[in-house]
Length: 162
Ligand code: ADP
Image (cartoon, rainbow, N blue to C red):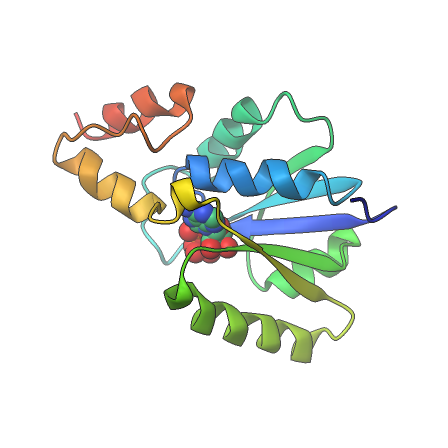
């Protein structure tokens, strides 16, 4: 399936990118001509990796996909979407617990920018439990994170908790 001449945005913190995120990136890259992975540079949160490091990590694990751009953004996502010319936001849905927040965000964004729509991809069941926060929690206790992250990202996370 392809939506022609379309730019999609997949926004998130990606702190760090997990196999669940990568699955959504791969699947949504097929739906758009260009998929912008938009890394939230949120100064009020205290991220494990800087926004620039998160961009580099995502670029390195998506280098085999030829229609991906990775950029940071600050402030309102709808403003960033307008700047890039994107009309569609992509979000991943893991469980019903994601749904309430995601619906609220999608409706808020649509009220602010009616020309921008949100589409949801359901997670691959393999990754339904997976989040960046749970990976950080496991890593902080020295647990095995090899099932959760792209291979090249694993040593970078371990290094943070040395
Ligand atoms: P945020 O800080 O905005 O929640 P995240 O980096 O945690 O950003 O996630 C970005 C997007 O990826 C969200 O739409 C989230 O629901 C989705 N996502 C996160 N983990 C998974 C996963 N394991 N499977 C599918 N989608 C996921």
